[in-house]
Amino acid sequence: MKIFDRYMIREFIGPFLFCVSGFTVVLLSGLLFELTDLILVNEVAVFTVSKMLFYRIPGIAVMTLPIATLFATLLAIGRFVQDNEMTVLRGSGVSFPRLIMPILVMGILISVLTFWASEDIVPRANHEFETILRKIVFSEGIPVVQENVFFHGGDDRYFYIGEVDTKTNEIQTVLVYELDTDNFPSITSAQTGIFQDHTWVLNDGVYQELDEEGFVQFESRFQRMEIITEQEGEVYLGNQRSVDEMNRKELGEHIERFQRGGLKVLSFVVDYHLKLALPLAPFVFALFSAPLALLGKGGRSFGVVISLVILLVYYVAVSLSRSLGVNETLPPVVAAWLVNTVFAASGFVFLFRSDRLR
Picture 1 (cartoon, one colour):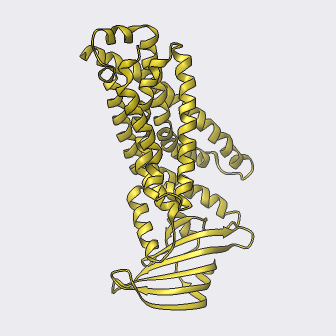
Picture 2 (picture 1 turned 60 degrees about the horizontal axis):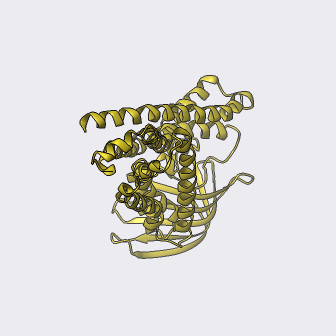
Picture 3 (picture 1 turned 135 degrees about the vertical axis):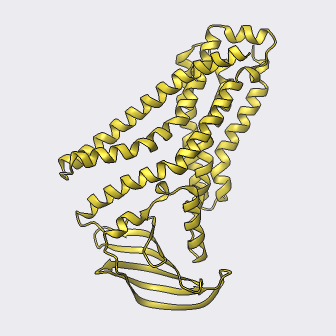
């Protein structure tokens, strides 16, 4: 069995590496096509565009890992089925779950790799990419902040901007979280605002002071408030972070801050849980697709077709489940883990019934 395990892993690694490299090149080519406009239209230096392309490689590569695991699982096992090697091994008394154990172990290892890269490498690379892009956009006179981002505003002050009107440069749904020297946080929320001349001008809002347990001990409404800062507007370009630019810990800290201010950030809460759920996709794909490979006698063609079907169903289901969580139809944790749970449970059922398929 040790010889067979090595044989199975070798059959898996070939298609896996081919898919990772192939899909990465294809996706990078599409991104390069979009970035070419920056060179031709915005007259951005080729070196700058090359840096942006480089910073996107980690995110794209991690995106291909679950897809490559699915393809490699179906192609590797499908090759054994097509050549009747799987029939011989199963006929000798070895159970199918034992035969695909190397594939499942590879799925777990790839999931661990995906999670580590998604937490450590990808957020930093995405932040560098977005910072360069923001500077390019800012040079054209677009508002200094983007919508749906968190950023540090200096002096223990954190901002959340919900929406940005690119025509008037007005920001909407603004939340400012600030710690003072006594560790009593204060929350300032405003309907609209604007940043100009080192000053945040906020309109139609509420100022609240909280105690250490998060309860409101002072509240005051205002029509206009000015927050003066010594920072230039361009400084905020490097401080802004979207969900893709934060790891799970950083996102959790921002969620905790702004939930204390009464802001509903359900989309970020769902994404927080998805940052743990989605990296498990390689293992889930391996578990779910391995028994399905027994049904195909068409070899590689069957593997490719069924892979595309599984990918379509999985990612459409994840998108739908996330939407249900954001709209409070499902609890955030359920919305994030629902699809993985269904696929994994189905995979276990298929796996333990697989020995009945001859």
